[in-house]
Length: 425
Image (cartoon, rainbow, N blue to C red; front, side):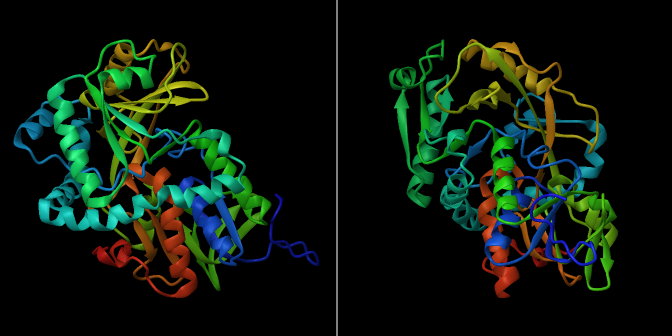
């Protein structure tokens, strides 16, 4: 038994928790911490351990500047390039397209200007509070050594691309307020002297933070949860069933039972919920990364916009990350985007040598309307949804967890736009 297990000293039987959280990624662990702070007894169930799946593989940026979610490109030229695989930000498997028809169509509708504007009003409020919601957890977990507060730079190789991005960044700043500045090539070179080719400049989002080990930060939050009396159990979420007085899964020492259960399994969530009758049109965007060590480094993460490539300094070395790929869940990797991104990153930096023999890949759980599902399941008492954060689960985990805890303990829905009841599932 791990520290914090709810354990009946008299008969040696694990007592029922108030809440069971399925999933130990950033969203799941943040959920557990928020409910614990609200006075609930909480147990986390995960098949591996904290921060070992999707939360491990991201760019490690707490994107307070990401006030507008990633919309589907609507420009006809962009769509033609996507269709013919001429852009590095999106790749797809032909065999995966039939299973993506519904979520992509709904994604298209949500990306239309009027609907997208309304979605962004909700999304921006989440992103703008992200660093403030992470801050007390970082401090309490003793993880400040993993955090950099130097912002995020979108760098540009051509003046045309820089001018277009600067105009859009100024619009975003005026509409929502995230701090930023436009820097020219000389100022960028001074800030990032390891960049070896002249660039035209950058949009520097100064309010965003970055983490040198996103899986490690998730683990630090999990350790904080345990130190406060919480429990983490290895178990299989697929064994979830209704119990007489709640919900139960099979654990290594017998059933793990709670009155309420929160499904925070990221891209795996719809697979579990389908057996309870919920047909959730999740769009899984696969992403790849690989570390390089022994070369140069950066003072802050860089997004090479024209090559859809993120270059992020990590403890393991420079992490090169890609855009999105539509593939069948569990399909073999096709890291063509990573090959292009690694070449582009190598033009900017002396990367050194690859750390991993094979690249990492994982799936971003994206709802077609670009808003996460946060709240009570429509047809089951005691069942709660908390997933679908898309590209921003690492950023928004603590924020949406606070909203979910408010609903679970207070009985009100603080942000109705995030409620699962918005979907016909």
